[in-house]
Structures are given as structure tokens and as C-alpha cells.
Length: 147
Image (cartoon, rainbow, N blue to C red; front, side, top):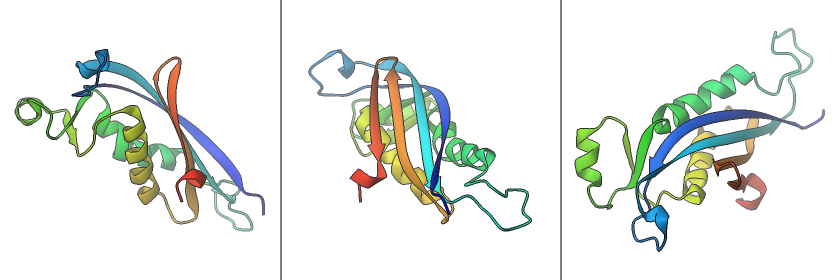
């Protein structure tokens, strides 16, 4: 049985700040994120299922990523829990996400990989993530590098 990969693209808007950083990104700023989620597995074969030949229905993958990432981070302000005003802002606005880490794209993608991996059904695995914060800047995560 062949092992194949499927990829789905997701887009979301978000803002963050990097307190203590020695450049302009220490200030509140936003990104138009593009994330590619790639899973791998064997297509379902030898059954009468309407999902015959699929690794996973794209609709199911979309639901997992939307429920666990997009619905939380789209149009959100992401701040480290101990960042100045983080607690006050999270009480004033509905979409402030506080995290235990500096919300760099590198840390966000690692967090997203953990969350998505746990939500996938057992017959597939997360292969890779690619997260663009700008058109020319992105971070990649591969399962094979993180075992």
C-alpha cells in the first residue's frame, strides 16, 4: 500500500508582540498568515466506504485545523502571559490569546504541530507544517526532525 501525503492551505490574520526583542517586532504588529498542513498515511482501500482511496477527507482535516487553530488564532492578539498589559487586555477583548512562550512564528508553529498532532485520527500522522508570516518569510516544521 502506498504512503501518500495530502496538504491543505489555511489563511488567518493575527497580531502579536515580542517583548524584549531588539527590533521592531517588539511592538504590536500583525501578519496575514498562510499555513500549509501536510499529513501522511495510506489511502483507505478494499472497503465499500465512500472514503475509499482517501488518506483523510479534506473536509475532516479542515474541521480539525479550524477547530483547534484557526477559530482560536484568527483575528487574535497573541501575547506571552507575562507580557505587559497581557492580563488587562485579555479581560477587555474577546480575542486575546495568552501563551506560555514568546509568540514567535517558530514557537507558534511548534505549538500548532503539537495541537494538530493530538487531534488527528490514529491512522494518519502530521508530516509537516509551513507557516508564512509574510510573503517571503516562513517557518517549516517536519515530524521527522521532531521525534
